[in-house]
Length: 159
Ligand SMILES: CC(C)(COP(=O)(O)OP(=O)(O)OC[C@H]1O[C@@H](n2cnc3c(N)ncnc32)[C@H](O)[C@@H]1OP(=O)(O)O)[C@@H](O)C(=O)NCCC(=O)NCCS
Image (cartoon, rainbow, N blue to C red; front, side, top):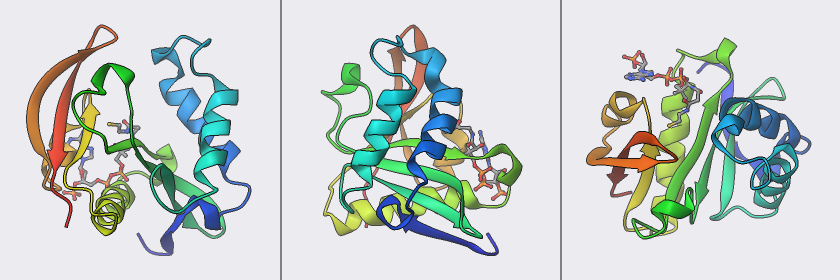
């Protein structure tokens, strides 16, 4: 984490398209390109850069460059709308920067932002990182199926 600061995307001009390329490269295959593509991912992040509260994005910055990000949103997957109305989404650390605590710091910063907004219960879904989130205090609330894939639903009470 040395030299890494977590900032609102609003304070990181020009980083939205970089984050969108990462997100689309990692999660693009999950979606119908008519629903979500590089252009819509970029537009979403540019919108997040216009505010500091939900829906918004936090960025891990090192030497003026983004190395990771996380979003705090009202809805992550429409199929899970009934589960909750505040979600941690799109946690991503660039491959070269993994394993140094940046992902954990982004999760904590997102939970702290949710606490500052008095979110009573924050949710996420994850196909494969339940252990990572459990170590950060998230509770496993069972499985769900999303676009044919099994995911863990997890929650935390911020604050
Ligand atoms: C998941 C991800 C964000 C983790 O970022 P990171 O910066 O490497 O994570 P950290 O260095 O903060 O890891 C914190 C701890 O969690 C552990 N950890 C990481 N991934 C884990 C996993 N899948 N299960 C259990 N523990 C895990 C690390 O070993 C580390 O343990 P330590 O504190 O004992 O050393 C990163 O691998 C990533 O961007 N992956 C691709 C996108 C993705 O899958 N995002 C999550 C969507 S749900």
